[in-house]
Image (cartoon, rainbow, N blue to C red; front, side):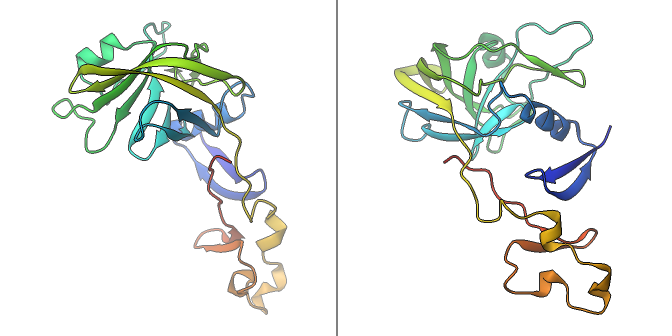
Length: 220
């Protein structure tokens, strides 16, 4: 199954057949799912901040905010490429934060950094192409939560935190459309719009020609 992605619903940017990208697009279409980012405050200086939506996780650099389901319907599947068997089994159905840098193999498990004990959202898991995803943060509402802060597999402190789904910060090229950068049939006789230094929202693709550049998704 393939999907043609669009930049902000305007400029065609790619055709992809990757399941994770398909899941991401599926979740973005759900108004009830936070598809921009989750803003955390009150955890620790390192853990606070914006965790940006990325299919089955929310990312803040190497830190990953996610949730694994304890039960998976027949015919569906889930996976754990990150945590030790103990950490995985003891945190099922709980929102967690782990450090995903330089890990993700059976011999090199990722470090568990925080576990939500109460107050976190409990939205139903979602199915897409047989993948059962429990990391579904609601797009509305704010949450007052209690988290365990972890070090070396042990709880070292508790944190009273708050969070909510953030709004996307507008970017200079959000208004760029396919007609902004696309070259007409006359472009054979004239310079491409991507060669015009004033067309700062246009970028050249080796396969698709001149098109709108992708703007980053960040919290406002």
